Image (spheres, rainbow, N blue to C red):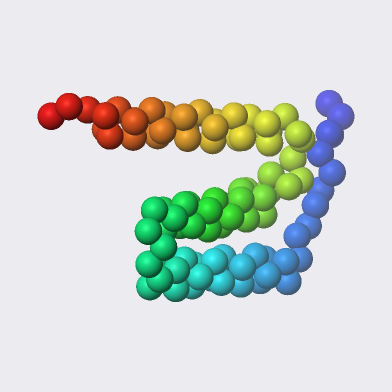
Length: 97
């Protein structure tokens, strides 16, 4: 059976940069909690969490080196997840108690 994947070796230096990025985004998200942004606080927190998630997916889960099909499937699952959360939050907000 022919091998479709080429072996890829990610240097430790790249993992170091990704780790530094994750730490920087974490410190930034902690710093943002000290600033009152009103309703934008949740948006900024989710944006930073999304950036950290993207770094983890691309480098630690090696999606950067996979076929486009896998990336499309992961994006589809994430969109479905967000849709379920949005529908749940809308139900929670407009529920009459």
